[in-house]
Length: 332
Image (cartoon, rainbow, N blue to C red; front, side, top):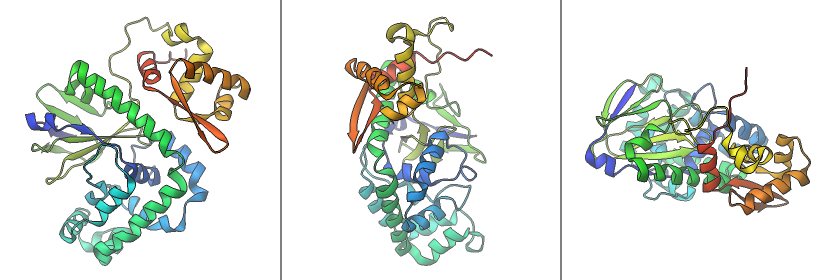
C-alpha cells in the first residue's frame, strides 16, 4: 500500500483532468501486463484491433514493455482540464534528455531494460517521435470515433464528483474514487496497488485526478517529486453510502418504469447505438428508439448522430439517477 500525504496546499491543488493520451495508453494495454483494466477496454480492443495501424507498433511495445508501468514522461503534463491530444504529444516530445534518461532508469540498469525501453534509450529523445506518431495514428484510426461519447462520460463523472466536493468536501470525494483508495481523516489517501509500498508527501503540488473509461478494476498512480501526482480512476464508481431505501425496491423502475429503467442502465454501461440498445434489451429497433426518445425528452440521455447511426449517452441527470438507484442484485 502506498500512502499519499496531503498538506493544506495539496487539498487546494487537487483537480481533475481529461486526457485522451491516457485513454490511448490504457486502451493499448494488455490485461496480463496491467491489472486495473476492465471489460470496456476488452470490448473496445476487440472491435478495433483489425484497424490498428502499423505505425502504432512502437507505442504498443512501449505500453506493454513492463508490469512496472510506463515512464513518467508519458504522463504528459499539460496545464488544462480538457486536454487535446496534440498538446499532450507535444509535451512528450518536449521532455528534456536528462528527464528522459532518469525516467527510464527507474526500470533498471541499461542491461536490465525490456527491449522496447532499451530501444527507446538508445535512440534518445529523438526516438519519442515514433511513439507520438504511433499515438496519433492509433487515435485517428481507432479512438477518435468513440472519443466524443467517452469525453461526455468523463465530464459527467467530474461533474458528479464536483457536486460531492461541494456537498461533503474533498475528503469525501476522494473516498468515493474506488475501494482501493481509502481516505483517512488525518489527511492521507491509502492506495492499494500491487508492489507499491511506502509513503509519499505530495509536497504542495497537489493531486491530479484523471477519470478513465477503460480503467475499471483498480486505480493507477504516477508519483514524482517535480510534478503533481497523477491518480487514474474508473468512471461511474457509485458512492460508498448505500441508498436510504429498502434493498428490495428498485426506485428507478418505480419512477420511469422497469423497461425504461433497463434502457437507462444499458446506456449507463457505455454509449450505444439504437441497434445495440435493441440487442441488449431483446426488443425491436423501433421499440428501443421509442424508449430512447422518452428518456431524451426527460433530459436523461443525449443522442448524437455519427454517420448513419446515432449514439445514446447519459446526461448528468441520468447519471445521478443511476448513482442514487443502483440495480437490485439478482436473487441467488
